[in-house]
Image (tube, rainbow, N blue to C red; front, side):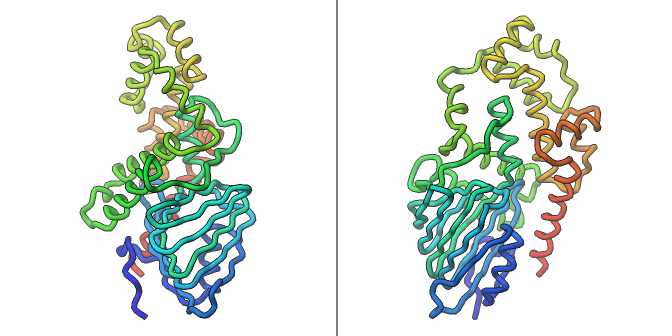
Length: 339
């Protein structure tokens, strides 16, 4: 049988007619799961293409026969799901989402029991991001550590609003990734596009921290905080002293610290350190050809040991572990391009 032409044609991942093989491959991606074929009158077929765009793992897959899959706990990934053909249903601990092409999609959160039911001839797009990437972005936005796991509302309305915009952004990334000379051939551009996707999810979709992120909208940033944060963004890779921030702010050190604690819940230097850690995590995840020392210095960390300790405390793993995983993902992506 001739494979159906799927998006991301430059990045073939799998094409199998064996249900058992499909189950083994999927288990390597998502962890242990149980699955059954719903319509045994139809021959089973799974075809999928897969690529990396910065911290986004994007996959498009098609199932000829309907499938029901259950996992005791979702993997350490947040997954944005957009159906292209046929319907599907997702259930995650008290929440359910109906997936209908052009109408509704789903967003899964990690660590929860998950059940997915795919209809016959289902084809869909999935953009997955590691939980540590989301948590780093959330903490940078809040300026304070997360006190509970980030949990999104499962069902998404794709017809309008932020979810519709994210579906269009994902479609753009898929199309651009398939062009040899597209903008995403630059690792830096790919990393920034994946950052835009993550921040759009956090700022636009319902989740248990949404009210904390909406607070700055109701109370605009004080001018001194805005000036300092803009300065931090432009000079995060350089040595930055408190005196530099005070000079940029236009207010006294006492007033600046009070404004940051009131608006961000932390000191200016703690906010800068969080931004630098987030930037380092993005760089290590998206540019595996670089070294930990190179990334640390570029992100403004002059002491590698202190950087590694702060990084592990924030992300639950060492910088070298993040880099090793990114290199493994990059190698797997290269392998799929050559097979």
